[in-house]
Length: 237
Image (cartoon, rainbow, N blue to C red; front, side):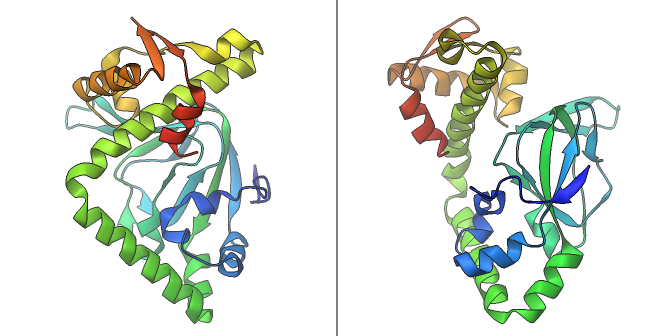
């Protein structure tokens, strides 16, 4: 199913992407006009590793798994993408190939911006082109300056988002209060760590930190959310 991106008009998904967050409301509306949404069911592939990359993708809802195959053909989970996550922003300017395969784990909408639509847009709108390049430059500068610590902060943020996502899914499935505050981790520590793009050791440290802050309580593979407001603050959603 293909449609215009009007399913998230109250909180446009393109505003989740850092390179667009510095744009004015006027320029954002222009960018939103070339976004389309596609509905993917569980098991579908958004793209395959090695295919030509020419689009920016933004997860509207659902869950996507990014994987790579090694030389022996064994699949390795890189990370999971949750609502608000994005990938492929540099494909708007460069001819690249996808470094991973994106598989839908939970059915949902994925918003997409094609390079062929974006490039003519910035060619006609110099203000938009300048704003986009400035935002891109700022993002690259921040990544360069904070490369030593960004991955640590990101792991904590992604862990919070994952816990909130599972908690929200439980609430939708069961519709009862306990499902909101008490969740069961859906995978072993190694796989769960892969979902947020980190190591099992870093995952353990982050869980221990959140527990020490009295935000969660961990019992084996069960997590009790004690302070959901604080978890939302860490997740920045």
